[in-house]
Structure formats: structure tokens, C-alpha cells
Length: 176
Picture 1 (cartoon, helix red, strand yellow):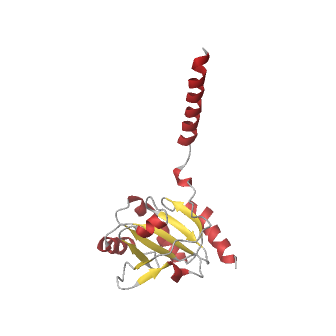
Picture 2 (cartoon, rainbow, N blue to C red):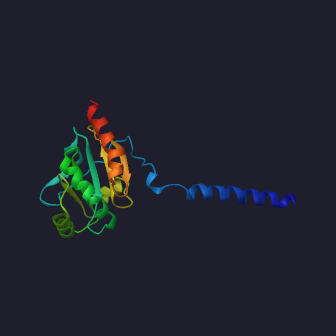
Picture 3 (tube, rainbow, N blue to C red):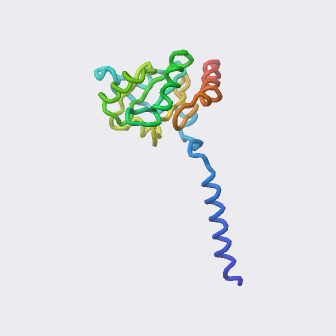
């Protein structure tokens, strides 16, 4: 009888770990980049291929970096929320067109509206990799010093905007 207790105990522990893991929300996976400087980048702009945009161009203001693509189904869900946010002027939104074709991204914005001050064109996905992007959409809140303060995985919803993102923007703008 005793020889069965050790395998049974190991089995119970493994089932416990599985049960805990199955109840975790993948949208709440903490980013290792929170409270660290946003990775540097300098890539061409989506609308003007001969011009670049760099992370350091945005220092001195609180801003959102929204990672999106024309092929992203979930991006369609969040896009009206971003358009409304851009109209409100609460925080500037910069886009990162991720692993997309330039023409497809431009067409998509022309059809659905453009909430972005500027969209960076990340054709090969290298900027996204540096930011730890593993799916689109993802949105980063970056402070005046260029430090990532929040990462939202998945489509930004009106509730997430009202309850989490905008209060953090207000707090960061109030900080000197």
C-alpha cells in the first residue's frame, strides 16, 4: 500500500498545478517590460516610407503604442474604441503596423478610420519582438520618460479604457 502513496501524491500535486493553470487569464500575463524603458526603435512611417519614427521622438509625453495589423480580426473589434479615444484627445495614440503589407495597412486605415498620430511600419516584426508582442492587438502605455507603465493584451474595450487606461494616463500626466 505504501508504494502507491508517492505516485498518488505526485499525481495529486500535478492535478493541482493543472487546475490552477487552467483558471489563469492569459490576458493578465505580466509583461517583464513593465516599469522598464520601452525598447528603442527607428522604423519607417506607414504613410510616408521616406520618413522614420523613433521611440525617442516621443519622449516628454504620455502616449499609447497600439500594435495592429490589417489581417487582425480582433483589431476590427477595438478600432472604433481607438477612433473615439483619438477624437477625445485624452492621449496620443501611435500605431505599430505589425507584420503587414504597407498597401494593406493603408487601405485598412482608409476604410476604418485612422486614430493614430503616426503609424510605424514593422514589416518584419522586429520592433514587435523587442516589445514582447505575441499577438495583435496589444497596447502599451508609455510615460514621459519612455518607460512602459502598462500593457493591455487583446482588444481595448470601453471598460478597459474607462477603468484602467485613462486613469493611468491621468496619473502619469499629473506626475512631473
